[in-house]
Image (cartoon, rainbow, N blue to C red):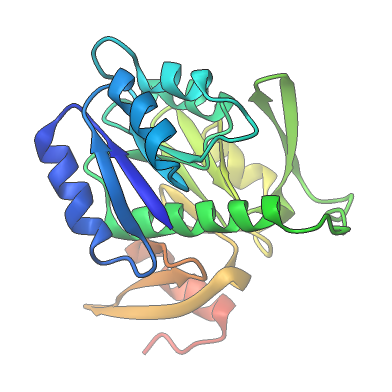
Length: 245
């Protein structure tokens, strides 16, 4: 996967380059330091994925994404220090939205999601079974109105201050809702609260890491690492059928 990095901060570009050196199958094809340069590099390099800073001089990352034609557009992952732009980012069908400083496991998840989205676009259409009608669902704001997202589709949910990020295998959605309200809505058998700021579909857990002092974290199938809060460890291990000792 050929990747273009776009950020007006040299330190942020260096950090992303260093992180991408650890991601197999991803090649940094080039960098751009502002929005206009980004559009030129996208046209010249035809990257598969663009890591796009949102707040830049002259032309913002959102403006860059909006200027790209839907047919030839690469996958886009927005990177920013400001969560206030998240709703606009997902409104242009971004694969993911990462807050600075970028965590390696979240970057790896974003890259895997972008790969998956490209594979789906390039493959022949397939019939996908709809989620169970009884599953809780969310009406999430989108470019052309609202999109229904079923809880059955989710890998995990994370808090983002006044919002939550609903992570599916192919993209994330931002939704204005509190974690307390979510806990009242969700079936704990489907999405289990594992931290004050996270719910996880335990069927998506590939590995349980024991961190010492009774603490654990959950590694999901696309590599993201979700910490389990101390007060949730015993219940989470029990749901996974593991011994707490």
